[in-house]
Image 1: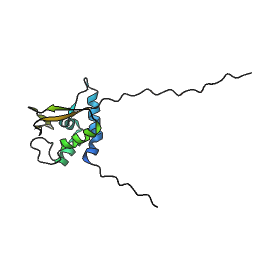
Image 2: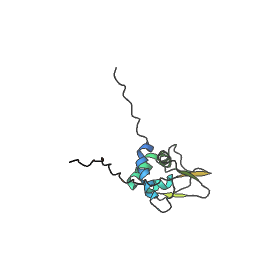
Image 3: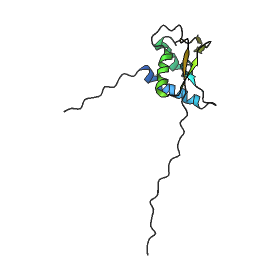
Image 4: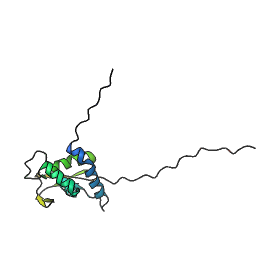
Length: 138
């Protein structure tokens, strides 16, 4: 009997953005205090070409005036959520963000998530164990 092929799901925006979001979070992790970043801050730190593409595809960055169902900030949030469980929530009272020169007020009236990744510490390579040798008997 033939083996059934597994169908690979189409790459979602969040899955496509995941490596880019990871790179931004790892760069932030190198800073003193290892800061948390919101989806808007991550979006603003993406490479310019990718930022333009994400905003073009999702039309709006997000925030109170985001009439789209899946704005760019939500795609970033979904990518970050799969990368880390180190998430805190910040009160959005009085907060505004600037992304690509545009001021955005978060859509949530109560809280917004912020994410961080801790830097991966490289382990020293283990030395190979040497086989115990017996002295040659003459």
